[in-house]
Length: 115
Image (cartoon, rainbow, N blue to C red; front, side):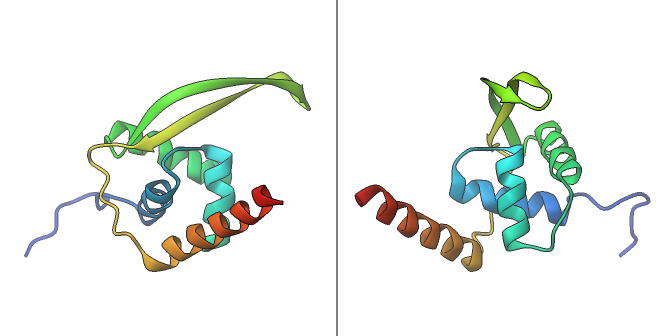
């Protein structure tokens, strides 16, 4: 089979983001970045944001909304959170280690809310 010239389609980082969003339902860049670095080899925030933007172009992600959060931040008084969900081209493989991570996380959160 003859290879096509150029870069292969897809990205392991973007696929891992798909797996994370499958269990999160929705999320914003920094939140996805923190979880990504807990589950996989660490990557930069820039890499996460690049892959989110690229995934929107490929219909793997949909930019659901942009939330404006007010507060005292080092850069000013507002922060924009770009909320992403899975798009029609996303193909989650539903990896067991990610499912276990979120199951454990939900168990801890439910214990916190009960006290």
